[in-house]
Length: 79
Image (tube, rainbow, N blue to C red):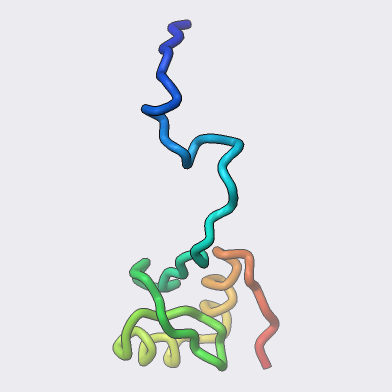
């Protein structure tokens, strides 16, 4: 086993246990494309990045919607 010593200043604050929590809200990503998602479909609760993805989300069967929600641990029973 090889040990490599890295000084604290090289690791940065994001690896420091003593750093405070972030003041910025967590980023949300599109469930379909993986891009940043500023929108949420009110019917399915899936996040989406642009209107084209929204059209695709609305055409998805409920089974697929549940699978996408399960990927981010947000599975909800749809009505």
